[in-house]
Image (cartoon, rainbow, N blue to C red; front, side, top):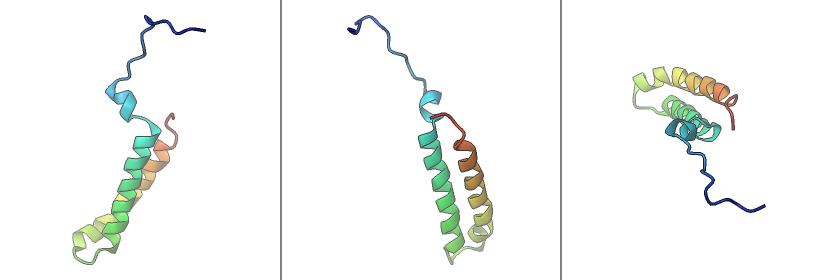
Length: 70
């Protein structure tokens, strides 16, 4: 089977490249890590108080993203 030179390749849009499991899992993991760092830092009470919400948001995002197509 030979490749036809005139066969157009499918063009992937910006949303198709971004809305995939790999990049979204990386973003969710980064948010979880930021929440843990916020929890362990000794400098700001505001960051500490938002750490649980940040970690929870990252965990929920990771759970949702794990259902997204590969």
